[in-house]
Length: 397
Ligand code: LMR
Image (cartoon, rainbow, N blue to C red):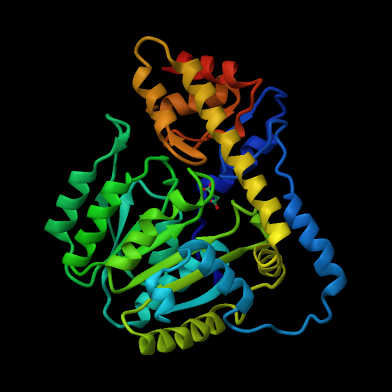
């Protein structure tokens, strides 16, 4: 049977991670995979997570199954964290949710939910988008199409083009994927006023929002980073959310995520709740417990929550400082637009206006690693290598 299989190239982001790891140059700069790093290049376990782990180790009494939709405290706390107080769909019991195996697991279950509706809508993703969106969402057999999003000339969002394109090409019932904040790979987000318009646009054209919220808390703060999601959630009757705890809790390998759906009635939420459990059962039976138990513990305990919020703020502030330092170092004649964009963009990523050739030269001549689209993970830089990084970028430009 296996003779019919064809060799597949490794995933580009994962391959880049391996390439950077294998580079023996002590001065290498790895701006590849979206993992937060401290100034000395480590990705530590957060203090709040370590404390919660200590508690869980002594308190955990069984390894028996939890449930197909996962830890219910985790789901409740996450929904409160993401949607805040007084979120109408939450108060009206119009939200169904399930713990998922990372943000990717949440995207996959979300895609399965769309497919299960039997409506076969087109799923629209921004150009560019996270490289794994299409494989993940498309793997359930949905048609994926692209809408314009990032303008590589202005280094900002082409908001009017995006609405025009969707207006002309999407039909009622189609699904539109948004990055809730910290757009991956560009860091270019919608401004609050644009989210307001996008929400009305989605409602008026009867489009279904599918929001990927992978980096919330690492942009401009929890409130700011969930503004668009909340706005769309109270404006449109339905919404699908895929949230991740990989980045903001640094729980990458534990695979912690949440899939949620806002429905137009409480009765529909009950049906969707059952569907989420059934979908998960069909895929992996149940999500892993450990990471979600830690998040539930942290969010449910005032002291641990305060520790976590403090650490999240430290991470966010460091990313902002790195943005400022890189921007300053790149601010030479001819590169001002790039320097401005790096400051304006949000979260771990920016996409630099570099060609594939220039990205290859950065790797070969300077041991600087980024995806071939020019995406950099700004958290991979540090206070001592920023001058060298800026010089390398300016050199290939
Ligand atoms: C990234 O975009 O680098 C991260 O989301 C990690 C991944 O799995 O691709």
